[in-house]
Length: 350
Image (cartoon, rainbow, N blue to C red; front, side):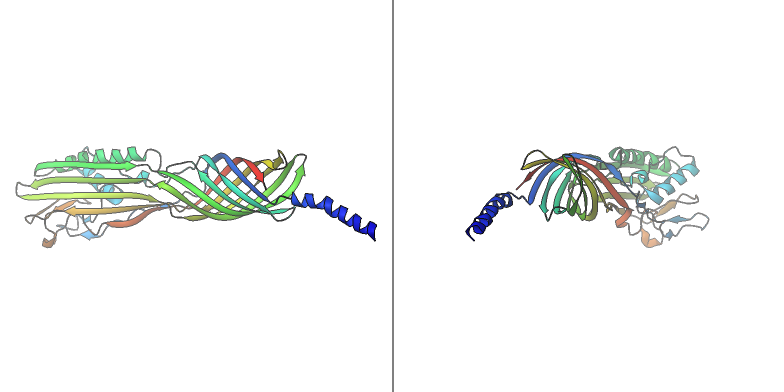
């Protein structure tokens, strides 16, 4: 009996230190690179042509446009100038109303892992990406090109009629934005096999993605003033704002890696994973057309289509630059997005 008791105590004593040394928690910090973004290109939807407005005859129809800077307004203005043989053309914003965030750059963050058994472990990860812009390359330059073309386009148009005291100008500001995306995920790690000093694992889970910083924006304002036949003053302003937005979204994470021990407490991990989810990037436009009231009068271009200017819509004649404008009109919506990340991590077990 005594010998049996001693044997049990000795066995327990030999097991206790090992149990005490069992380390089920692991924390690691990592850094690495994001190898770009792939996925759907998204959908661009420009505002449809506006409602017809009254002109002298259906042979020379015109329609509402909320802005001359993009879409149907730019198309109509350039069409009329072409029919007059006028040299000026407005440069539309249309090519820049898309998202082009390639997502390439650096990534860093941390992971907390809890081992469930020899095969499975739960993981929480926070990934912080380097700053990037959601706007396409040359966004600010494209906005400036549109601004510069506005006065020339209207100077050419107004040179075709009985106009005096012509003044045209435009202002613009654009920011490409600087945003840092962050992703928080929960995942299950599965031990696959061991090759010498390295242990292979697979990872799968999901989480949310958000960001800090600013998205791309642009503000443009175009103005023209003139007097028809030295009697009827016309003064109109085209104000347009473009905003890039990206609300909080969700991602699915898949990947895997290799781990190796540096010591009893420290380890090194090479990890590759992909974040896949909907690209919630949106581009919205506000457009506010304004016409100053004055002595009743109007003039039209007598082209097809036509541009009409009016100083008093109560007469039944309205300017082509008119209508309700646009309030948060969504011209672009993202599709899907995947980001591939390769990181090197230093881990500490406790």
